[in-house]
Amino acid sequence: MGIKVAVAGGGSTYTPELVEGLCDHEDRMVVDDLVLLDPSEERRVVVGDLCERILRTRGWSGSFSTTDDRHAALEGADFVVVQLRIGGQAARHVDETLPVGFGCLGQETTGAGGLAKALRTVPTVLELAEETAQRGNPGAWFVDFTNPVGIVTQALLDEGHRAVGLCNVAIWAQRRLGHYLGVDPDGVEIEHVGLNHLTWIRSARLAGEPDDRLPELFARFGPELELESGVPIEALKLLAALPSYYVHYYYQHDAEVAQQSVPGHRSRAEVVAELEATLLEEYRNPELVTKPKALSYRGGAFYSLAAVRLMASLHAGTGDVQVVDMRNDGAIPGLPDDAVIETRAVVDASGAHPLPQRPLPPEMLGLVQHAKAYERLAVRAACSGSRDDVVRALLTNPLVGQYPLAAELADALLAANRHHLPRFFRE
Image 1 (cartoon, helix red, strand yellow):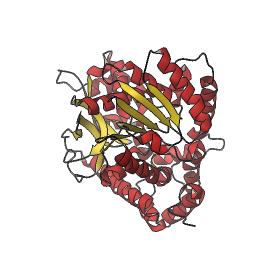
Image 2 (image 1 turned 180 degrees about the vertical axis):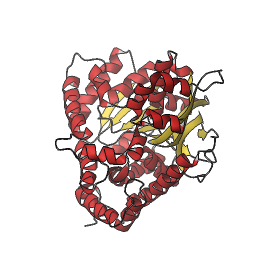
Image 3 (image 1 turned 135 degrees about the horizontal axis):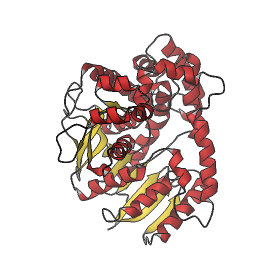
Image 4 (image 1 turned 90 degrees about the horizontal axis):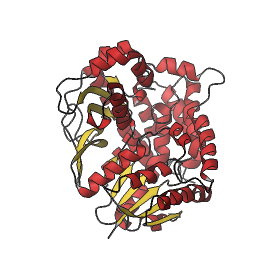
């Protein structure tokens, strides 16, 4: 029997990159059946046609199809890759703008906007996972790319699903550091640790060498790393670590909100909506048989590489070391075993096994513990459909954390997302 991969949200403009990645890495895993699942007929046709042209041009001889039938897509699947966006860019725009009116950060994965996205997303992903467990092949893996990855993966693992979460932040950072050091990025070992979108690189070493190269990188490429992380170089040196870009939303919250409050400020959702329209128009070109260069501006760099490497390791049990989202199981001292973290893991046929990490210093551990408490409450709110649970989550969120602000923001978010939240509005 060959390998079947179903892509939930397969009409995404990201999908051609994933398809090229599957072709590029057939030495690691050969897919015989690829199905794109998406409710949008337009995207199934436009994105699906491009993906099929890419596959056939690359000499791929497997079965390819698109569908809006969830049952058919998941039947017999070995891997289900999930890249959903419930509500599309319109809902994302609300995530990125509504909180700003309350003096809070507008962002689609962290803060109040991230909670709104979790409320919309978690129930749907859990339904897909439950059906995968019933219809997929025995031992099928559920690979989640859907943001907020940490919260979604926490919900999946809390329910006992065979799932791994994945983000492109770590592989992107590894490649940037390799570029600065002038070496093959695969030879750069990064000590990446934390929660999804709340991580730090605490060291960067070349394979087989003992010396940490971060101090050298800070000295030689301070302005570049400051720009890419959004955190002043003085803070990077103070922390002796390189935070992911999302950490600057915590460290420089007020400055970010002030920038978002400037009249005429454009949300990322608006920018991406325009880019997606351009991409879809390009995808319609019957002469196009490869992903267009414009896709690189969409974000998600090295998404396909990370996804294919993870699936190949899970399939073949090769024991590769990759950065994924999984249970802590003692890797980070100070967090429960069942807390979902993001760090280096050995990936084999039985799943992802986190590598032990050095204890986090108080300035990192305190923030991680705080954010993890919020993530657990976010899962509870998404599953319960309780307005009180939403308030509790916002009250615990490090980027909100005030009352009655949490209550007022909860009511506004629920009202704005009413159409996508049937658990909260049972009519």
